[in-house]
Image 1: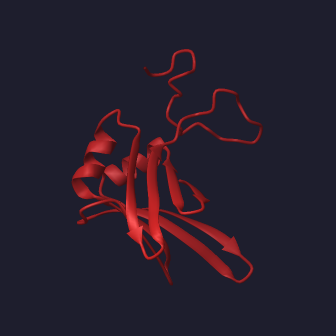
Image 2 (image 1 turned 30 degrees about the horizontal axis):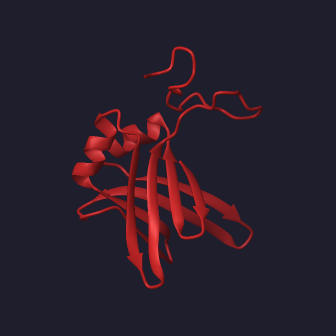
Length: 124
C-alpha cells in the first residue's frame, strides 16, 4: 500500500493482494522504520458512515465503511473519496486501486498492481 500526503490530503493506493486482504475483512498495514521508531499506517473496514482518518500514538488509521469496502473490492470501481471535516477545514481522503505504470521503472516490482487500462491488453 502506498501513502501519499500532500497538504490536507491523504491518498492510499492498494495492490490486488491488498484489495483481497481488505475484501476478506482484514486490515492492510505498512510500517516505515526510523532510527527513533517506526511510522505505521493502516486501512481497515469498520462500522463508520464515511471514509475517515485518525492520527494517534499507534500511527495513521483510515477506516472505510463495510458496505463501501465490499462494493469497491468486488467491482471495477477505481477510486473512493471523502472530505472529512477537521478543525482547520477539511481533510481529503482518497483510496485507489494501484495500476501498473505504462512505462516500466527500474527497481519497481509491479507484479501485484492492477493492469493499466491504457496499456496494450489492459482492462477497459
